Amino acid sequence: MTTTRILVTGGAGFIGSHYVRTLLSPDGPPDVAVTVLDKLTYAGNAANLDEVRDADGFAFVRGDICDPELVGKLVSEHDQVVHFAAESHVDRSILDADAFIRTNVLGTQTLLDAVLRHGLGTFVHVSSDEVYGSIGRGSWPETDPLRPNSPYAASKASSDLLALAHHRTHGLDIRVTRCSNNYGHHQFPEKVIPLFITNLLDGMPVPLYGDGLNVRDWIHIDDHVRGIELVRTGGRPGEVYNIGGGNELSNRELTGLLLRECDAGWDMVTFVEDRKGHDRRYSVDFTKIRTELGYAPRKELATGLAETVDWYRTHRSWWEPLRQRAERWAS
Ligand code: NAD
Image (cartoon, rainbow, N blue to C red):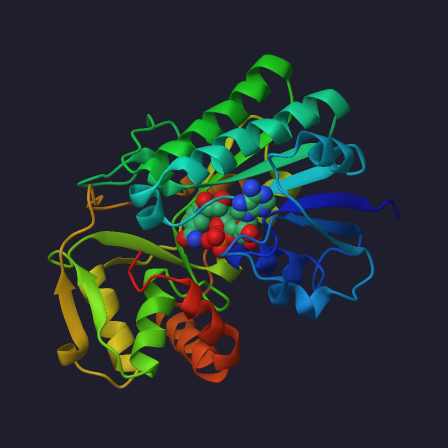
């Protein structure tokens, strides 16, 4: 059996590490070797990979996707890239967008340059529904124009366009995924769900932006990771695939569910000034990945949230040190 050598950028983060753990689990494909390239920024955590550290075919390289020499060497030694590495927190991009442009745009360009120089099979570029902007009614198909609003979303949209341009101009096998809001275990406690859960577990109030009526579609990381694997193994070069969870909730509704799971009441909620340029609603139409690749979200939201709260309840040693790194603010 030929082994496919996959380079996973950002594989020490929330979603990337779950992707790697899933690939190298007993239920993963039998024919893959995985190298993680991760800078270990404040959001990266080597402990997220403890489960697979001794697995056959696993390697970890600490480094920056903006480093052309390192990236060139690694790309030349691999068959495929799944690209997660990014600055991912919208609020931070509002305070200072510099690292977002460097990693999300220039880092992606550095990877694409290396692929062009050394050749590669498939390159999966992991992107976000935020690139589409905000939508009042209905859902975005992949053909909708990109109208990003936050600096984070603009940096992701830029990298999507660069990736797709390298398919059209150079014929590279680039596939783009655009996913809705993820939740699950191992998420850094600055994002809204783990921030609220860890605050509530500590008996502290939670900050709800504006009127709390912004709507997001929530997807469990198991479903996102399965969608990415379907695109890596069966998607078409040059195509974009939306990946959704089918769980649209206002932030108020989400807060209500988390309060219930944590046995807390609305007295624990502080309404705070809205995020600048806060997109009102996101909604992806994921018919394409459903019909082409047989994707369907499987994790029921109530079950997924209960499991997530339980995980944070039983993994204090994972998140307590991270909270000192994070500003207590919602995503
Ligand atoms: P995360 O912040 O948890 O992880 C990002 C990882 O990238 C970290 O391990 C970090 O150390 C690493 N990294 C950052 N800069 C780097 C650099 N210059 N070189 C090498 N590594 C670097 O993010 P996440 O939530 O796991 O998101 C992963 C990807 O999925 C991102 O591209 C994000 O845009 C996308 N995405 C996230 C969501 C979500 O809800 N979290 C939704 C859709 C898409």
